[in-house]
Length: 122
Image (cartoon, rainbow, N blue to C red; front, top):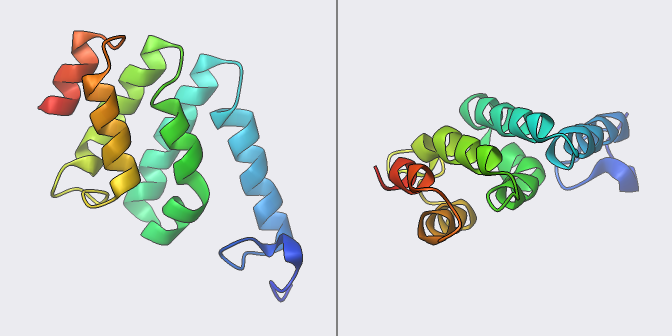
């Protein structure tokens, strides 16, 4: 595939790849099961560590940011613990305004446990 299809997405990925990515986001980031949403956070951790930053930012970041305000406390805590190393100044996303803003909002939120705040402020 030449990647010229209108379904190619921002990265010029083949349509089958983009369909697979959309499936991952629907099946995990947007899942009813909080465990699936936590799995998406862990998937993003690996993508941040191993893939070019552009892939994470263009494809996986927006659903991840939405999970920072998830209704389930364990999902928010998972987000904080897993993303904290990445949003620190020396982390791979230490200059990513959207991720830094999400982490800051989490640390300031009164509905989050002290545990979430401690993780993000450490």
